[in-house]
Length: 456
View 1 (cartoon, rainbow, N blue to C red):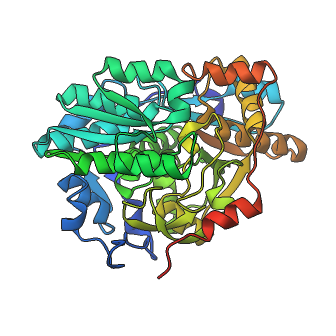
View 2: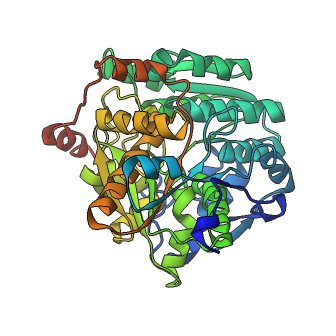
């Protein structure tokens, strides 16, 4: 079909929505390295993981051979309340940039949580309820994941306990109140409620916290309560699996109109959004059916892919979680208090780390002020106020479109718009007032954190 006939927004029919999640690991010749038990140094067994995670989620975490996994009907029904999400042709942005490039974005902000996080939250809550649990614990950075999980737990009548990175807890009180409205108990992390929280506060007095800190507290809280399990909003393979509804819908919509993207761009913190968007396209690349250029965009303040090392590391700051082989800055790395709270994680998904290590995707890091500059430009022409995390992808999409303007190439660019920024007005205020600054960690700071990686 001619690109001239493509509407501003492409919606799928309900019958075209995915009925299965896609597991990209099945098509990877070299699989991601297994999670290790920090006590034994051996691969984690299903029984060991079952003490922390729901049983069905453990199966999904360990399954690297099944290409497709059925989406339970109850989850499909929930998805229908806010999916399919639109694939949008950014005609106005193209015009403003004067670029010959065609720009598309998959918008995941059309739900109360304001982001893509609900895709996995409802799945994890469903499996917890099916197992007969009382509740779940989790961490959240910017608050999108905590909001999504509180919504999902409310739907299934589960208790929800959220440890929110302290700097985000203070900067984003309205996100916190949405969680509480849905019944969640929200605690700033690191707190004095857990042993690991007290240890982190003692080691880093006055710390703003990090996702690694919050993960440690949430895991301890789950382990200390009968009938509770820990759930995670990113990083793990099970989460990337659930998020593939993003990429599957996108690919179906693009195929429907004969569109093939040249570049696929996503922000990268732990990897859930990026992995969900690129997986079906990456599968084609792995099988030799098509070729694409993938770009992961991370904050210069927390550059795990671009400046980290590929090694086994703890998934959390308190060192209570399994070890994962990933690109990491070290579990003790404390990122600056940037406004993209969802990207303030010291490591990267094992799946994405392995794909990056094999040269199948690229990565760039960008500074905070340039990200917000891109966000404002986008908002003024496309009418959506983007989340700071999403704006990292917008920044690089604009950069790539301007390169096309210089060369005259008519490339097709696809990026993930993971959510809205309406709870991030403190950040926008600082940018508009000229008070925002950039912080880039020194080589010495990163080296000090990396030096503490576990040795085998």
